[in-house]
Length: 317
Image (tube, rainbow, N blue to C red; front, side):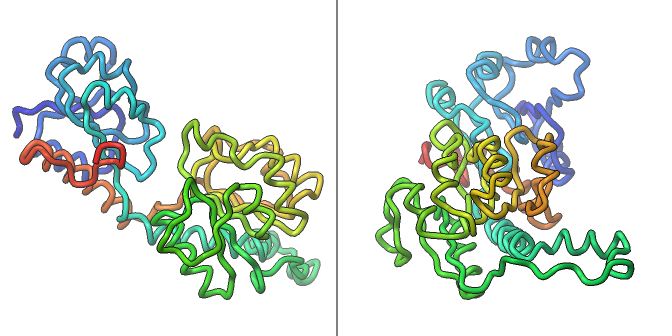
């Protein structure tokens, strides 16, 4: 398949680059002195795109008119305009399943860190305050007796629910539809879910449909004992409303692994005392990221060998 030309707009993991180099002719857009000239020179030869987080829309597809597949690294694909890809008859794949357990582990760890202020307690120790000022204060919040409301009960949401149940938490959920095979209580609106829980776990994908779904009204419903944990997409939470809710005591605290304008995190969020922040590390273990990269490779190889993708996105099944 070395005669098949693949476009790589951004750097990818060695496991991806090495295998794609061996199987295809790879054009690295990020290495070009003049990316537009490269696209003008090779765009018509491109039949596949290996994508790590960058945008794909009609603009790029018009410059690669013979592209057949976009193999995206990651379970979320809100950076890809699926309508444009469908119109151009371009297959889109993502990397689900292989990161489910890792992200669920991170989500539960972030929940515990946030409720018990573990990151702040470590900072207290490292700053020498345990010795100079005494023990870290007793945390007002606890994981005991909590109800977790999960916004987005897909593969990852269900894996988080299993972990939360093991910690004695009650579970309820909200999504586009009630799931017939799920026993957890369902709430038809996100506001109703927030009112029914004290720990709102955001696992929803990004995109226009969910943008700022967690807004001032939802935070008000969550209440003064409430925590928001987000390991989905930063765009799902209205960050200005979240900051105001934290400053005003509308909710108690938050744990965030994703943000609206990554890697830029609002100074006001970083200054708040009961907020735990992580730099989008939900799936960031070497083993999991390698598995995700392998799936990118497998999708491209399968497509050009059999005409079928391994993990097409739902819109293209």
